[in-house]
Image (tube, rainbow, N blue to C red):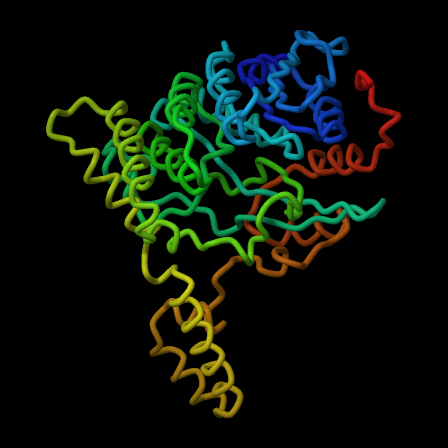
Length: 392
């Protein structure tokens, strides 16, 4: 890295929350200690894996152990750790990063350069490369390739940013200006809700209230492919988000979510006539849309099966005409129009790194091959080769 790049990266703080995953933590530290980034590890594990304070292998990585108090749930402990983390960064820019996720060097430099030069943006997100570990086999694909800026993502109009339907991106792992990041984190997690849906929507709505967002067609971060947690309800058995918000039994909790979202949005604006509560209700109304309920989706799935079955018996020309007059959403679900760009690199289509890089070269997504080669090498590194060992 050049002195200029080192200076730039030194302006970034990464906060890593972790809980009972010592191997992931060792691997994350092995990655970050080779960068000039400041890192705070906030560990909720039952036992401490390292001594509190600066780690021995790096003067820029700090470890804090904050286990659960008596009667404290896992998520309440996480909220407490996030509130603590919101006071730590002293650099210009900050971001959250899971213990099995990584920001790429080129992605960080791109985001920090944009934030340093363009004062009209407050947060940067990018495309994600996802890796899967199967024994010694490491394979890759893309995630969130449909992410894009909305019409109002960089607008100075707070209401338009929050309610803009034209964009598609997630802000939990955005690289942000630190003063914005601190306030968003503190506001999102100061109240403990029963369902994670609440904090996901709180974080996004409050982030949009405070941040003008740039979405880069560049691989900015990498994450491990999803693995079901045996201690959690399986996804196929969990209540759908829309059903949860529409259920009368959750009405009190939804009202509290609206209250916290309203307060978070109001903290971003100064206009007296700005009605943050109305915006909060409109935002959450989308999450409770009937079209996303279990019943609607089950009926839609049945209808689409019928459409796809009918397609097989229609002549090609007739089929094209019939599908072209269907509503756009039906076209997407019936494969008349591709919903996801570069679909050959997503979902279940994993590749070894060499083939993944060749496939990426044919897309509009920018990347630095060295970033992924570094991570591929790290993911295959034997644990005994890590520089920092756990306290046992």
